[in-house]
Length: 506
Image (cartoon, rainbow, N blue to C red; front, side, top):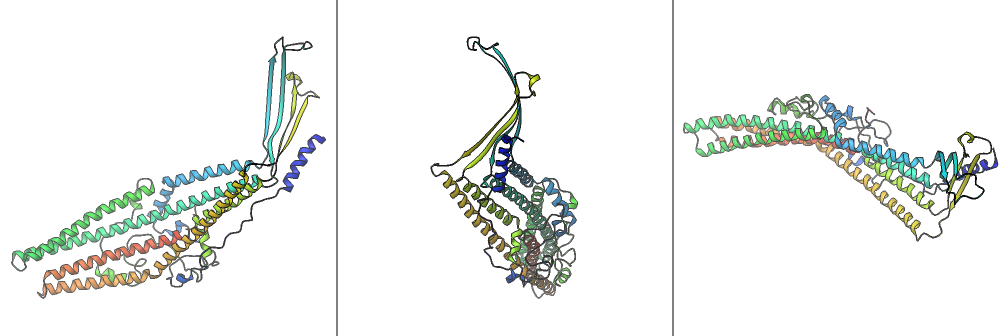
């Protein structure tokens, strides 16, 4: 190898071996939240979630196992294929991956092959007297290195690292969109199931009140009751009829919302099964046994999603929040800003770039590769910033300010995550007591209705007492359905607040 070829290779090797990194060393900030969640975790019932591994690692079940309803699983799978928001997120990932590929390519030299032929005629008045012809030919073939920057200070490497962190950030955003879509569909599914239960309750109540109104009409015709009682009964009937119409509309709206989330038509077997009967006295009695959502009869249980949760270890570390997609995305953004600081610092130092080419040239194609026709050039260039009007310092200040803003956003993301998990755990801790209390209230209201009906038949009270008891029972049953829905929504919220599980299909 000639000395001319050894020189650029030596410089290249020296550049690669002596390169340094001016970016500040990244260390994950300590979460600005309490160290544990044990303030609420100790009061939880044994139906929560986490593998009994280390307390600082939380592995939620994949959604395919978390969702027990086969119809809901089909809905979610269909939505993951069709949902437009998720398609946009996936397209953004592909874009970020391509941008990272472009930036990473700057770390490697670019080699270009060039072949050129040139035929030129010079005017007779312009050519020299010794020139034999006014037409010249030139053919050349070259392999060139196009302005490759020796990354002594890590500028190119830090720009590549920033692009990588942006790509990882977009990937976490996609996971966040997917988790949001899964939980939104689960919430919409539970809402549809609950409104179907409310509609069935309203229909049963309407049928009961129409029967009572028919009885009062006959009594009024016989003179056994007055017109006020008849009018109040009619009011109760029309109120129930209005509730039926309202819930029919709401059920249709729930289906439309679910179809929009899924992004396509819904098959009947994907929807919650329609309830066959409303809550009755005997059914409520079984619901009050502590098995309200998991062991009750199908008529009592609001069709919903049941999550497979295990026990939370006492003293669960708040480090588990770092697995949430939004928190992970905020950390990738912070790491990208650290790399940007390194690139901004490198701008204060000299930039060394190499341009070189080697090839052969001749005045005829037949002599292109003859001996003595080789040609080469080597052009190293050093650019040293002397005066830039403060541009480099301003760019560094911008990078540092972006780093500080990203750090604040990271802290806020963890604090929001801590609050969401704490709120969900706080609701979870009292949910079973509220359900049991409401079941007891429905039992008591049902007993009041039975006693008022008995007293009316015995002639001890008028029918107004029965109407009041019917209204109280109807309101208590509506509240019970609402609480049952809230329990299901709490499970979904807790799963989302903890960041969800890894998709088993990935």
